Length: 323
Figure 1: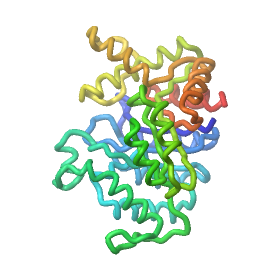
Figure 2: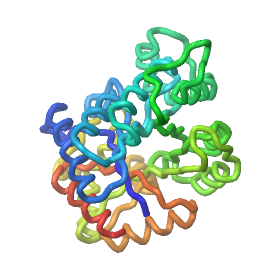
Figure 3: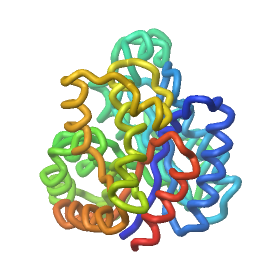
């Protein structure tokens, strides 16, 4: 079992963005000491609580403060950007930290249309161009020409490219272009088996010589199942509010417990639990092994979005100790 961390960097209520950034860097250093394989950063914009809006910068900050940890993005919003510019940033990182850069890219618009438009400098929606932009990105990072131009610096090896997705169509794109694939179980938990199967069966060598899939999932590992359930209260309410477009800062357990929830809210919380693994060490181990067997994949990116930073750290400590 190979374990990594995917950080959305949600800010706990009562903390600042500066606090969250400092605590995230410290967590990455601790994760390396614990034996985690990789540490990736999401890209979110125009939210009150998400502090990771520029994964490339966070990658550089963490890579400069660690020695072996693979750092990555999960993921850069490629449809909104120039593949050449993204490739140049990745190659610069690769030159600084050879062999440690992993670039996850996705086709998300990045939020509401006004957010997408601001990211793309007013250009029309380009989500349909994602496969072409991904192909161009792969060519650029390998030193090949695209539109008569080569990206620089020209590193000895290319950074690994991963495409993020939620189903069979995205898996087909990643397989056809020979890049890695990240399945977002933490967003869409119902299509994992078919998606992983499509990626494995249809993969053709390209950026990578062999298929390499990761699965991203919310995990909270407490001292016991009851303790984990208590910790999960803040994540439950955070996710509920975030999906409604409300305050995306993480509430304390006390605030989360006191929050008024309609019957519809409660049903949504229960539905969202399918996107998570929550329990004590034995429960978490069994669930990770269960999904690893179902997906025929034992590499994971773990998200833990709870209010208490120390409990979050201890959850990661318990998880890595299981394997």
